[in-house]
Structures are given as C-alpha cells and as structure tokens.
Length: 158
Image (cartoon, rainbow, N blue to C red; front, side, top):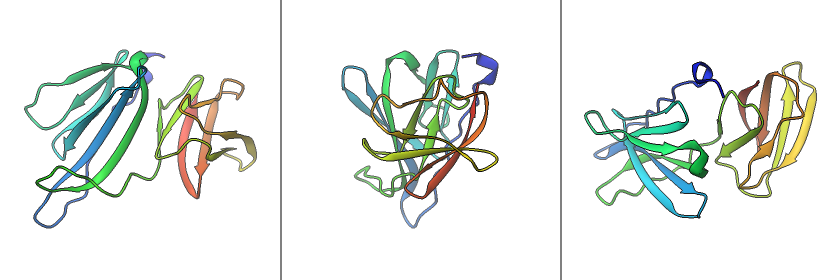
C-alpha cells in the first residue's frame, strides 16, 4: 500500500447531555487479544506508514499499532459516562480504503451477506463476511459501493 494514498481518519463522536462524547475503538490482534481505546472528540485515529495511530485526546501520546498485527477493529460511538461504557455501534466502516486486496468491515458480523456494486449500479460481487475480511483482488481498480444489511459505504479499489 502506498503511503500517500492512505487517508487520515478523524473520528468525532456525537455530543450528549452531561456525558462526554467519545468513540470506543476495540482492536483485536492476531492472537485474539483485544484492547479498548476511548477516542474523545479532541482525539483522532489515522494511518502512518504501516501503522494505525491512535490518539485518545488532545495532548495524549499516540499509540502505534502495526497494521500487520491487527485482526479486527470494532467501533462504538455515543455518550460515555463515568463508567466508560459506550452505546450505539457505528453503522458501517471499511478499511483499508483504498483497498488493494482484502477489505475489512467494522459493524459487520461473521456470516453477513456483503454486496459489492460498481458505480454504474451493476452487481460486481456477493461475499459472506468473516474475520478474514473479503478478498476483492479479482475486481478491477475503481470505485465501488459496499452494502450490508441496508448500510452502504463507498470504497476505492486499487
């Protein structure tokens, strides 16, 4: 993946009454271990070279997670109260985007049907989602719409 094509991802959560708005990002590594990161409104999540950089809030030190070590990323957004729990899972998020071969989808469970449409509306492929993502290497380069359970996200295939 070429570094200049990796977009920065900024996560901003919705504000709420008497609670702090945040996005909880759960990263599961290849061994199956998971770690939660609470990204506040002033924080960010972005790619740098071959790493996912996590900054939980302004002024905090960035956490570096190697992309090759990541098995799954889950997002939950909403109001985070004193106990740190979040609600309302994010609808659909595709990464890496642009994608060369394997695409991962946050907000999608194993076994869910994934439809890929070309920009002209034609069906380019149907897949069953798993923790290993979906392999799009057979698709030609271009823009596509990924649809899962009525949720849609646009991706670019390199």
